[in-house]
Image 1: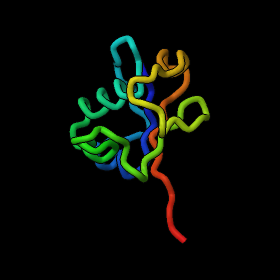
Image 2 (image 1 turned 30 degrees about the vertical axis):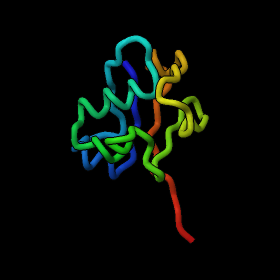
Image 3 (image 1 turned 135 degrees about the vertical axis):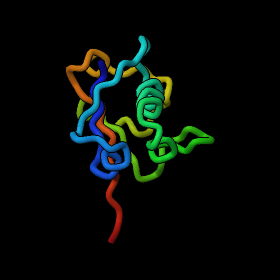
Image 4 (image 1 turned 90 degrees about the horizontal axis):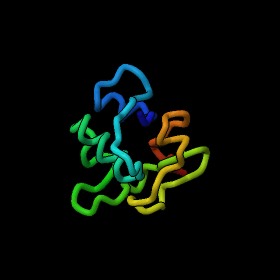
Length: 99
């Protein structure tokens, strides 16, 4: 099971009680496979994390894996074993902007 931590606004949209969800992702646990599983389980999140046509990450959404920014990694990249086996979470973070 892959653990995914979502920011407050996405948790509200998906009607989740807690910050973390567990998803079953078929082997070859890639960045894209995790996002596919998340959108499949919570259809209200479709289009909020990725553009529905291009499947590219939305500009103010970031992904963190094992304390590293994976926001610019390709969707078909394999996630670390720690994420695939559920010992480390996959973080979806709303980026900050302003001035």
